[in-house]
Image (cartoon, rainbow, N blue to C red; front, side, top):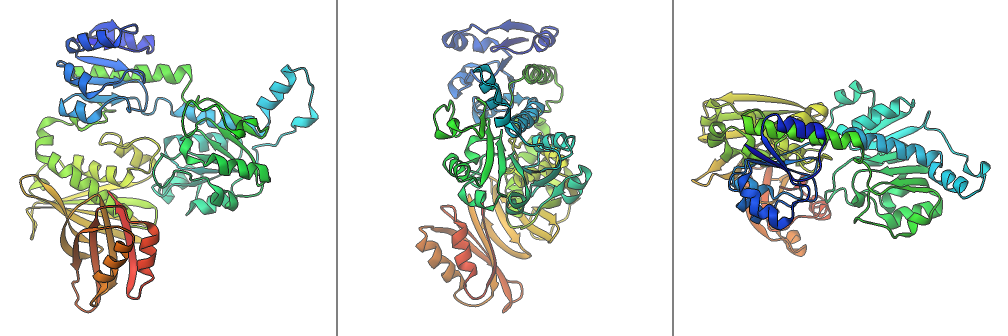
Length: 526
């Protein structure tokens, strides 16, 4: 088999490939030459510069695997590769240590004024008194986002004898205890107690501008912020205002809202340390990414297990034929169950009934975890890495199977267990296209096709309640696509589920809950 190494990777990775395949090094290959020759290769290894577009993938008639030496796969069209049966594999944890170390490097540089003192001394000034710093020892570190990188940062901070707080609604209390970290119930609590705050969450609608004027107002006077995750997590103008007012004691930034990013008033401040997105830029991380990706490509071409595949093509065909139609249903149920809860997830039960129970349902259990974790982890979640991410957060997955079912040919029930109780939802697939349907939530049954936006309310079972919701949705410019009501005990409480053509704002849900008779409400984007 032929392998093209299109971009620079570690020599160790190249040697591993050469031991098994015919390898071409195409570092100087032009785009036109790549299009001309791509059809002759069984695998290609890239970094971030090569764009695997649908057009290029269509020309890759023999391609079986795309290896991305790094974490992100934004330069690979995953749907196009999946349609062609091409495995896409990356090295998701290759830069975790590098990112964690850089976080601590920035923190130390910030509290000890290292860059400023260096600049002063090389400029010919001996300003020893000017750069008196502070110690990490005895300070409280607040880690927002406690995945792989957040946990590595916490471990290293503990060696400085810092007290570590962390917020991550997907990490169990037991996992926090195992790592000697205090888990807090909210970001607000963390901000109010931490001397130094570090961010390790993905960019989502909920985390954009996570640190803004409102958040800064909650922080301790003189607190500092470090961001090596995503530039969009911090409103730079609000951060600048917090520094200028003296509310914040300093900030260290490795990432920015758009990159390259070289002009902003914040760069002129002595209490700010900046680096040009160097979190993953170590020789070891780059070498590790190349070796891991070479191992993944080798496994893909020799029939081994591709542990870092980011698309479903890595799943065995015989299992996929029976289970693939239920993967979207399980992901939606997981996401909905998580969204309907109000506390940290501790464990998950996935129950499979009917014909699917005769199969190995591990893939479907993983799909439930994908739904639960999606949008809440620093690294993208997929069918391969979801179990590891859940394990890192102390989330236990329990699967049960029963070949019998009363009302449906197949039924999937998901129960998310947390400190305050549990949330249960259930669904099935309908028709030749296996459309996912929601059949119960919060203990009430109904029959509702899933959509991208769903709202669920518990309310007193009395006339006019659906109309009240519809009126407020209409005022917000949100159209109800479908609705269903479950009321097992007439005259008592009922559950209403509605799908809409647009997201429903939290403020709209709050308005509805302020109406008489409504007790609980959630809006979830699937």
